Image 1 (cartoon, rainbow, N blue to C red):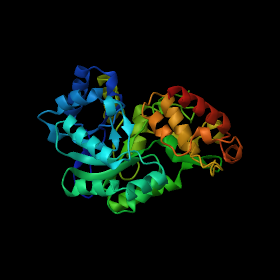
Image 2 (image 1 turned 90 degrees about the horizontal axis):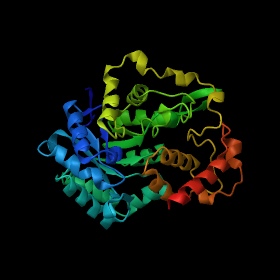
Image 3 (image 1 turned 30 degrees about the vertical axis):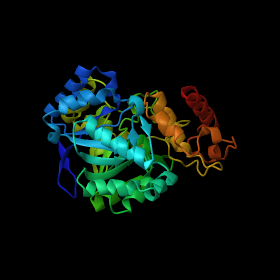
Length: 366
């Protein structure tokens, strides 16, 4: 196992952690075995957000007697009425939900307190104006959370949080599909995202990574926007090579999944190499959305990249993607089919068709 230190505090965090979102596919005993096996291998980070609470009790049982050996990343605003995930920005519900989370895991503190899934400016402003950020800051002052953070898919939102000067760490959707954009006939790293990682490194802010495989899409040539598959080791290496990144938190469904991730440590540098991405010409990814948002601005105010991302994640089996899509202030229902986005898109994506697909897909899930 390899470890990286949280810059301001020195705590060592395993470069691979456990994302609990897919554990519900395992039995209670299997979940306990997965967590115990991970800890035996040196994993000391787990993120607890999940689509329902079925995995919570087995995780708590696995951690009994060794809670202090695991860094628990818990979310403020991820709540589970009747055991099913939902997101709230109502302070009283958020407070009650977080208290229930602590109780559920038999602990009185969270190592990392994450303000959950902030992707829009309106949402960020609500968090700041409705005392949610003040509540999170007070939890840190009182020692109920050790490190204050947030989770987001948006580089702009990340910068807004960072400018508060209060952030220790955050969870970010990070992989090659999200980071690259078209440049001079090929693909190049997004300047905005590269500068975000460098700014975090400069300020001593750590990053934990969600979606290192892009919801599994990058592992399959048929679903990858690159039209070429990446291996688990390439995806992990890519994320860990970004400045400020401390750990990757892929979702695991079984011990076999976790073993596959941990094979990263025994692979060669050649097996981890992902440099082929930089040489991909446009034609290799024509028609595939890589969420670069070069299609913007949308006259209807739709975050087209996010709509496409949540559609792809939902189709790949990410059960939280539906809720995130539904929480967008504007979504595919607001599309007026003007086609301005398609004129701007460097990959010639049929965006109007994608908006219709998203509308129909999520309508069926309501």
